[in-house]
Image (cartoon, rainbow, N blue to C red; front, side, top):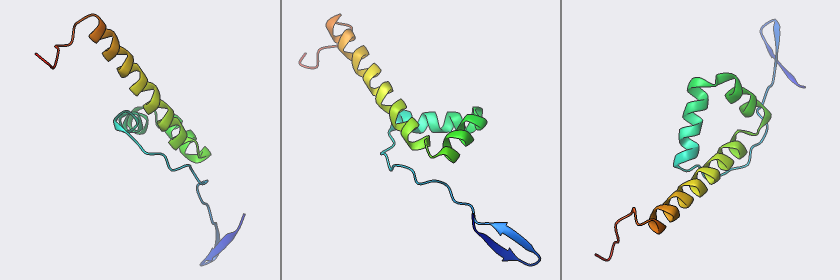
Amino acid sequence: MTYSQSGDYLIPNLELPQQENATLGKYSMLRHTYLKTHKRSLYAKLLLSGKLQVHLAEVDLQAREIVQQIMCQASRERILPNKAS
């Protein structure tokens, strides 16, 4: 760990670990807001460990898969209107 002098004090030079750059979609942005607002300790833990982006990407993928399954099931059950009509 390195330090920098600030007056009479040594201040540690802290940096967050590098995180993967993942494209954030609708559901990952919603999860990010939820964690930051309601689950601050989990948010801080994920952020400081460098796992926040990976977590958000996983949540987004899972949510999109669930939406796709619901849409397929609804179309099979003819709940959704036919676009051709």
